[in-house]
Amino acid sequence: MAIIEIKNLVKNYGEQEVLKDISFSIKQGEIVSIIGPSGSGKSTCLRCINHLESYQQGDILYQGINTNTKGFDISKYRSEVTMIFQNFNLFNHLSVIENCVIGQVEVLKRNKKEAIEIAYTNLKKVGLENLTDKNVNQLSGGQQQRVAIARALSMNPKVLLLDEPTSALDPQMVDEVLEVIQNLATTGITMVIVTHEMRFARNISNRIIFMKDGNIIEQNDPQTLFTHPQELETQSFLKQFID
Ligand SMILES: Nc1ncnc2c1ncn2[C@@H]1O[C@H](COP(=O)(O)OP(=O)(O)OP(=O)(O)O)[C@@H](O)[C@H]1O
Ligand SMILES: [Mg+2]
Image 1 (cartoon, protein in one colour):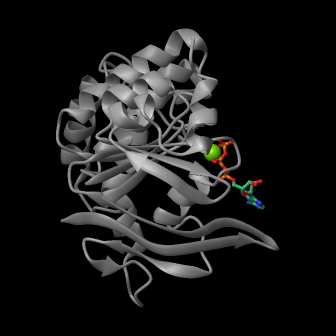
Image 2 (cartoon, helix red, strand yellow; image 1 turned 180 degrees about the horizontal axis):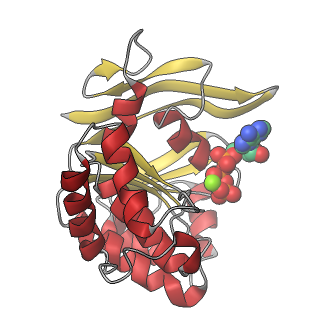
Image 3 (cartoon, protein in one colour; image 1 turned 180 degrees about the vertical axis):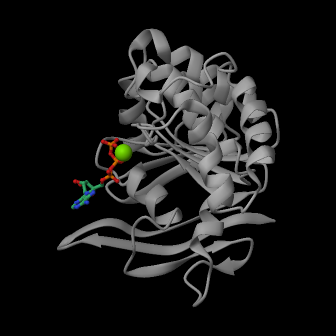
C-alpha cells in the first residue's frame, strides 16, 4: 500500500509553473531518490509533501488520507513525515540533546525523562553519544546533520524526507552522513531523498525518479535507470556523471 500518494500536483510561483501535474506514490518501506538538474522542482516537491508550501492543484495523501482535509493535524503529520534539510535547521542556541528532546515534549507530549532516553538512543545510532551536552553551533557540519537525523528519529517518523542532506557539507564530512543514512535504510523506514550524489542514490534506492522542468521524465529501479535510461533528457543528464 502507498504510504504517500501525490496526485496531479501543480505548484506555481507567480507566473512560473514549478510542478507541472506530477503524480507518484511511495510504498511503505520504500527508498526513493529524486534526481534532476537544478531548478527542476525537487525541493519544491518535498516541501509540498511536508506542507511547507501550498499548491494550486492536486492532492497529497498520507496513509490514504488527504493532507488538505479540514482539521488534518499538520504538526502530528510532520512528526510522522519528517524533513531533513540541507542546512540542518537546528536550534542553534540549544545543546545536542535539547535539540532532540524539544519536539518530543512539545509535539508528542512525552515526559522529559523518556524523551531524554529516546534522544540518547538515537544520538548513539548516529555516533554522537559523547557530544550530547555540546551546543550545536560548536559542532562540525557533518555532526550537525547527524544531530538533525537523530532529532528526526526521536519523533519515531514513518517517513523521512531528505533534501540534499550532504550538499552543505565539506567533502570530508559527506561520507559520515551518507553512512548514517545508509544504515537507516536497513531499518525499514520509508525515505524520499533528493540528492546529487548519484553513486549513493544508486546504492541506497529501490527506485529513482528523474525530474526536469517540473515534470517527472522517467522513473525506474536504479540499475535500469542508470544503465538503460529510456528518455533522451535522462541520458543527457546522466552523461555528466560518467567519470
Ligand atoms: N520561494 C520561491 N519563490 C519563487 N520561486 C521559487 C521559490 N522556490 C523555488 N523557486 C523556483 O522554483 C523552481 C524549482 O526550484 P526547486 O528549489 O524546487 O528546484 P530544485 O530541483 O530543488 O533545484 P536544486 O537542485 O538547485 O536544489 C526554480 O526555478 C526556483 O527558482
Ligand atoms: Mg533543491
